[in-house]
Length: 432
Image (cartoon, rainbow, N blue to C red; front, side, top):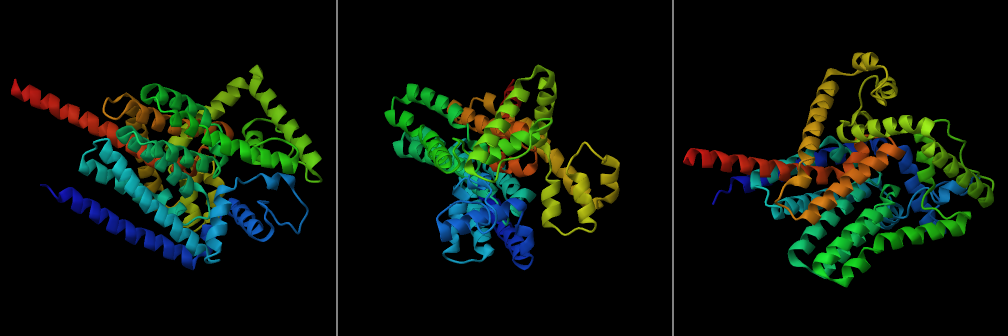
């Protein structure tokens, strides 16, 4: 038996341990790199939950901003609060997220193995997963990306276990992961719709009533949190972040949310949402909206993570460069002039890798090997996230990170199938 793949995987895990130890120490000695503007809201929500029993994502001693009652869903603040009971150090959060990364690595390896990906290709998938710069960087960030990534990967892992073993507990766990995912970040708000449709077809194959019941868990989580927000703000909604992103994604947005009272917030929320819908349905602006969405969706798949690298690695002239590289379509010449050559080289390699992975993943839905339901589920998760981000946010590597393992798994499975098919053709040709 060839033990080289096992040794290769062991070497990858060992090097990954060293790599994550390195970024952990970097975060330990320079803790400011662990914090983005969103991080402070998560920490505020966690602290207010512990001290006051509310998820308000701001300072309660200052003027109340009603949008902060629903800005952040409860999942990540609850995790931060629970970890703070053990230690107030942010390093504990970083260490826990590293643990999630390595647990996710096992799930990715097992998912590929169950899709009959060859061991060497599986090892390559693990290497890309562990050493992708965004993976290393966000394992240290006080951000919800790694947790959401883990939950989405776990949902795919439970699905393939269900398809192979027909065990009801796996389909329940799949939907528990999706429910936790929507409670983690608003981007998953509407995924319950394609997920429910997929479960209807699953029910038609397996005739287990638990399939349909479990599929309602993400919707139940969404509805419960939206009802809580209605009780606090007077408007039934999931997150004020949704309208904030919609405002920035469309031209001539109306100004923000009311702060003086819940009534003002509800009025401004409805006005902003109605304005966004009118602009979306306006035929004069349809082309602009579609072009913007398509551009940001494409950026979702290929962005090499320039912002993440600059935030995490101290680079000379960083402040000036940050303003320049936030948008690929502006000041190209200036960007190349002020960016170090090694950063350009890294970004170029990552750009090519992202394009390669995307092209390979596009083949994944059409290969005959993995179960059709697994192929549909992974494809829906990836393209749902890309379209939501493309429409409502910026298409950056940070948002793709949550589905990066699924992209890698699909790409490797597709390439393995093509490679095997090519070998069979060569063997048949040589036999003739």
